[in-house]
Amino acid sequence: MQEHLDANLVKVTLDWQPKYAIDLLHEVTEFNDSPLGSFSNVAHYLLMKKAKENNITVILSGQGADEILCGYKKFVGFYFLDLLRKKKICSFLFELACFLLRKTTINQFKFNEAKRYIPFIKKQKNAQILSEKLLDNYRPKPVGIKSGQTLSERQFEDVSKYSVPYLTHYEDRMSMAWAREVRLPFLDFRLVEFCLRLPENIKIRNGWTKYILREALNDVLPKSIAWRKDKQGFVNPQEEWLKNELKEDVIKILSPDALIFKMDLVNRNAFMKMYKDYCENKSSNVWYRDVFAPLALEIWLQINKEFILNE
Image 1 (cartoon, rainbow, N blue to C red):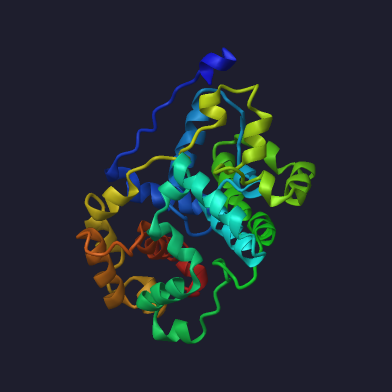
Image 2 (cartoon, rainbow, N blue to C red):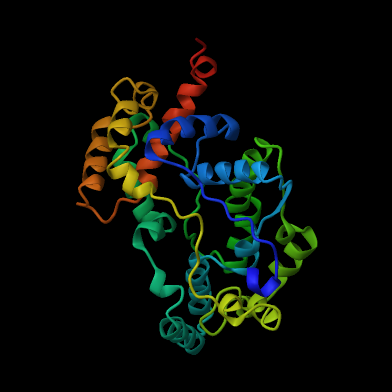
């Protein structure tokens, strides 16, 4: 892209070592004012710090493009379900073949990520570590595949309730922590309304997600970028750290005195067994977020315990 645009490139390296990770999780949680979703939140915080050091005030973000143009892998699943419900078997088989032949989304499928959209598996996973007290009153928001939900309905929910509010919240908090301004061109309300009204088969077509965007930029961007197959976000060693370098820190923070256990939110024995299996690679059914979410919640509770416990 630098060569294509003939632009000046500001290349930065995020200096982030395991020994700083826990302190950074606390620091970033305070700015975020809610439990973090992953180490990517910290990476974004450090990126905004680098932007300030390089006197870059305004940053353009691509948030929203995947939600309004069906860029996420999950949308392919919703699209396939739509085709099957409408009995468009030939279209379903054609698209399935295209995705398999192009080696795009389906070839990047990971069960550990997909399970959160499968209601039965999601319920079973939550039941493993949540306390009985919490399970008795457990009424989670249904973020998985709902019976009869269409692709367009799921897109609307991601824009209005799930993905976009979460992502823009932490991007805004991390940028404001360093007095940087993030702008979101893909979330211009006119573009959002236009894209959400588009037929599904021009957003997902011939084995490609975001098809209409790729076509629109076909003569503007290099083909290797416009038709790129893989999707790459912030790369960070969160799984490696949780299993190795940060293992002692995780066990220390989630000791028997941790608030998530004292408040009877999480069953510690169940969590520690799951964490042990995760560290020893005994279960392919445990995702890093299954471990990170209780850790992030505990850090947030510790920061705010004087208000939560009225101490």
